[in-house]
Length: 447
Image (tube, rainbow, N blue to C red; front, side):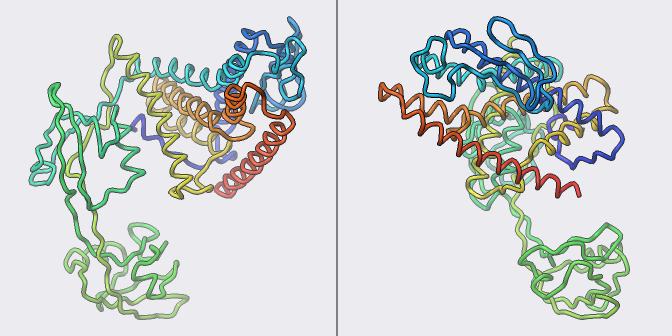
């Protein structure tokens, strides 16, 4: 199993070990949120702001104690937390110890401290991971003989440092960028480090041409149509999911092996073929013209493993690991805004619990060390993600509050407190609606 290639799967509370998955997720969530709120708490104290309550969780209090004018609480629902400051959401400005009485740059530091502490936590955890596991250089392992990449001068052992202007620190950068940006039949520019010397090559990707009917089978042995590719010949000919293809050009295809043997002997081309299929016990025939499918290829493979890090290299690649997590979050947000991803691609607490549980279960057979490393890796991702999301300039988030405080710093007077409060309240309601939609999607995926 590749350490950085964890894939999100669906959670099932009925599975054995489901409770443990939830418990592990709650512990990780709680730690990340506690550090976030601790950032607000420490900077509030530093700026003379009275913290009325510092709590972990939401809902009714389970345990609480008061010390130094602050109530410390553990609440019923462990997802969430708060650092309540005196006068934070009111118009009070003159009373000593209130949030609004503090200098504007002090308040900015208080609000920004939560996300900053998340990045600090991510870095500390990344130091541990990098110290044990190492880092993943984007080293070219093999160049396909006769490929455009070879002709352009790429060599085995080159370390990729840039791809079409996108800076590459580690192999994961290249993996995520090429995943989100489909390779096209356009020139590719790659920068590499070769024995300490920077080189840049540009080449056209190689293209493999094939012809497809446009369907997926239910399994390798079956000829039942499990799904149809939109806009491809079989869909346009009217075939449906559940149809069973029984012959092609008069040659029976009773199973997957027979179909593959036919395709190997008579490869599909731009010439029409006759497909016979069954639906509800009746037989139908359709003439299909396979469609050309062009598959660009870079013509090289790169490192998918880890290299031992030593000394200060551990700190360097731990920082680059956090940078990778932040960039990945930002790239995902960009895809969401531009339509590359939809709301259905988002995951709420249920999806995150599943990801953590999957990381745990897939690592158990590889020993305790790998279990811990994968869980810490999930914590780094979540902590960096929480830091980025909270810095977005949206109402009710830390970033939205910072926008109003920066306006106050520029104008030298605060924005109307009531207007600001209404904006943040509206933002909070929208976020709650989004959370409900995301959770609903997660539940649909489960059932």
